[in-house]
Image 1: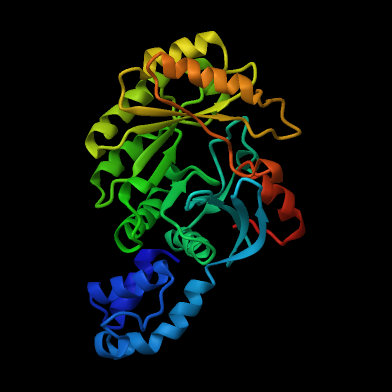
Image 2: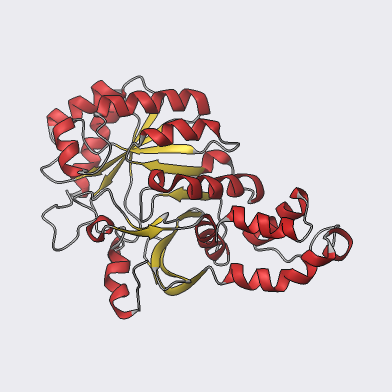
Amino acid sequence: MRLAAIRERLASLGALPEHQARVLRDWVQGAPHERGRRRPADYLPKAVREALPQLDAELAGLARVLSEHPAEDGSARLLVGLADGQAVETVLLPRDGVCVSSQVGCAVGCRFCMTGREGLLRQVSSGEIVAQVVLARARRPVKKVVFMGMGEPAHNLDNVLEAIELLGIEANIPHKNLVFSTVGDPRAFERLPLGRVKPALALSLHTTKPDLRAELLPRAPRLAPAELVDFGERYARLSGYPIQYQWTLLEGVNDGEDELDGIVALLRGKYAILNMIPYNTIPDLAFRRPSWDKARAIAAHLHARGVLTKLRDSAGQDVEGGCGQLRARVGRSIPLKRA
């Protein structure tokens, strides 16, 4: 169910844009329709009021929690079932954030990622994306939404941008706290500046070497790291938010002195933050997670050389919470369908 289809359905019942906004606002904020000074009986068209119970039930059925896996760091990974039997992962993050999935599977095929191993099964609709936020808000406050779960948001632009617009306008989430993550698809750089809501941008960098990037991200657009940073810098200046460059730290792969020199050459002086994330090890893959001491030393070294670097840990380390791992592990026991 796409948000545009919900609006069209409400319009067919006589709802004006402000009525549509009210219904969707109540849903995404988890609020009863009777709240506030304008009660439905005094504000919404009769046909809309009569349709609300059925619509509410359908919205509630877009996504449901199949299992919940709390971690010691305060995060919790949710395995979320969709109406057609597919499942995605949604992560409740510490400090009032939620990480949502935009696809079932992923076509990029990053060598170190569990999600990409099964390929792309289907797109997640804008309604299903927002439904993940609604599920999260039923459990804890949500002040930030990051599109860093399963999937490549730039490969599902229409749905993702619809969801971002609703969240930025009706969900009381600051636009800078809506974070669009991408491996660097040029279509995203074309579309993001045009929206009413301009989210913050996170770019998956992972290496400064074009050949290694092509190896690690085999089906990502063939943008050299320097080109990616050029695109990012233009958007940063337009939006007013620094670009968050994502760097999954892989032992012996992208943690050498040559990479550190490359990072300094690319990012020093840029409107940017480097998020360095030690790899969340997947048992049957060859990549390994460096020690925390080594990761801390790398981050301190870069910071000292003029690159704002934040060392982050992937949420849910103690529950094997890397993106796609929960679905792969728990999903074996639930009926998952190919679209």
